Image (cartoon, rainbow, N blue to C red; front, side, top):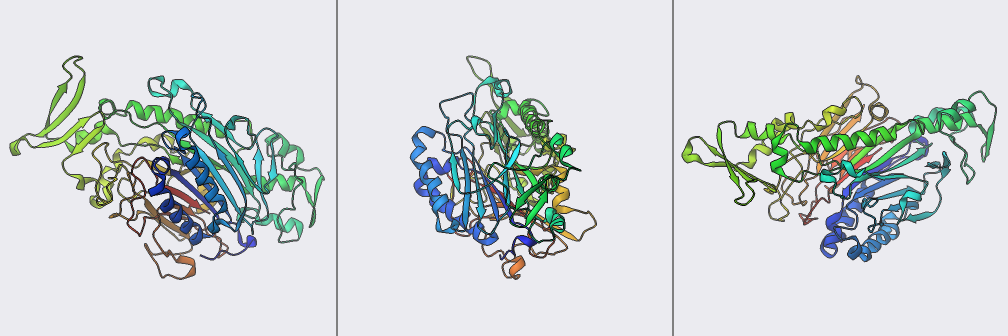
Length: 518
């Protein structure tokens, strides 16, 4: 898809992927994964691209370090990425530190046509123009260009450390559509002159108020631009990107005990912690996108009560401890047929069609974890089947594993200000398709999803010959939210593609991609 120049706006592609399996079996999975990723880049041709990874390096990071180096080198030097002449890579490689290691990796790529992009220095509290390619690893806590935290130990179930936390970066794209009005202040189509290497934008509230009304200016190739205009540019074109990994359900039996489950409460607490951190008073508030592996699950107790409403329950206990180790739900009649068997890591329901019929929408009433954040976060309507845990058998693309209750785990969320940025008005003509693509293809334990929407632009689902503005040439394993700038309007695209090749990209964990293209 062709994208016009910076004057029409900057295309931004945000991608999230739990890539643990790529490093557990790099010979079979990594090449295919990268090939599909490159096709996404080729299809959208974004100006700015962010790739957020969870479980980076696999289960055994130390053993996978050589594979990590190969993966990073491939991404930075690939011919498919040759037009991206600037990059920032942040890898949490401090695997020896239990209290800090998150296994998160964040990659940012800038297209050569993008002239005015700045990254925020959280220590100096100012933006710095991005140049060259740089890789940061080991102790990211001392890196000023991001905020990285592992959740406090008392957030972890039973206070046992695991690799859960978040990384936050902040960016300002002054070529982006919201900043176009600033061009008039310069009498030029160039929005912001190149900043000195030590940065010029002071985005804190105090800095902003001190700049307004003062005739200070910054020199640039197009002349002088008042400093307060730089601050306004930061407000209008700045956004936070948060790479996040929340806690999973350790036991189906424990999840079933209460409604909502204890694990839901832990995720609620952790997500609230992240949101409080990114909107606290330390820095100017900007729009934000939080996307990653949230591990959201259905309300297990309510689901079981609904699916097995007419069943009788048999409890199986361990002989030595009397602990409940299994629940068996049988039909009251029909020869007492077993409907559901529930163990710590077993959710074996006799009829998986219930999770697929009508795209599983009957189960959405049990998808409740995000509802407590409705005043803080926005998500597009879900109209695809649960995306986890699909079979990892390449011949069983539609089959769920019987390890967990199927659920919508990986999500793309945004602040309400970010929603307004991309949707603008409820009265605008728009279509939003958030769908599941590749229902017959093995994508590992997470099935990819698709959603597409536009402002003042209609688009058919699964189109392949709709012309330059609407062409999706091949289904690819990625979820994307896209705002396309070709026609000088904001367009929203969320696409979760599936591999057309039929290859199983993963054998374990997630390798699903979620991306947002603006």
